[in-house]
Length: 360
Image 1 (cartoon, rainbow, N blue to C red):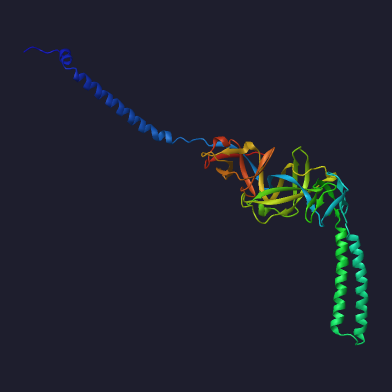
Image 2 (tube, rainbow, N blue to C red):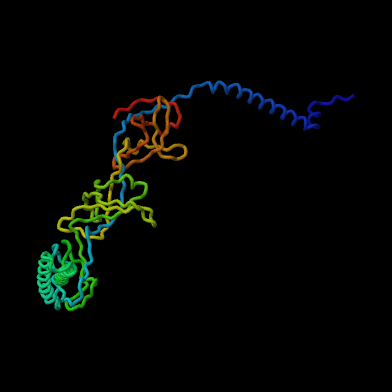
């Protein structure tokens, strides 16, 4: 029997080579996985070093929140003067834009026969006074009845009323300023005829200026009458005023509450109708001032600060009170808090750390 060579046997059966290689590869992979499993516990047993951070202790202090409003200036007083008697304008005593004092004549209306009516009423009054005195004397002697005396008394009252009405009508021929101010507009010219109630002039009082603004329903209950307000005009000028009016009913369209801030206007230099910015302080609350560098983000992207409780990090979202050029005031951190000032970018909420206090 012929002897078969091993090489010839393998050459005629190549699948044996493939089977052998697959078997060896499987054994090699199995040994590698076993070695990895053996080495895993050793890796977990190694201690991860704790992060080192610096912190600063902060103590809260009373501060206030500011609200900024936009408003417009308005006159302290304004009035539209009308004619109280019909007649022709005989004189104009002022021009548009003039300053007037309280009681100063602005225009004169033709008196007509009012002076004669006043004289007639005064003469009639004298007659009625004599009739009344005579009736009173007769009544005291029992020579005149109660009805006659009452008629004499009524005639006297009517005569006095006629004199008073004539005086008022004569006085109303002069249209006067009810308060000191500026004549903003004249609606008449000399020679015009005016009826009762027709407009004659409009008057503004700018001795004080009023800022009209609107406050949201969230802040309206924090305002009080008389509190100070900082006003900044469009030209950069600043002034101090005070709240003189707070509406108790909100606007239906904006759901805001109208307020008025009053401030002095020396020489009436500030006109009505210009834009302003108003800064108001709300009620005091405890807050801590930090620099923007102390702020950090949590894993969800929320802005806050990373505080230290014992040796663990606690992230607290910010509750802003007000912002200044050199920092921001935050509330909701308690009366005293330790805030991470260095290394907060390398730690997360709940991490244990090595904390070192950093002095201010």
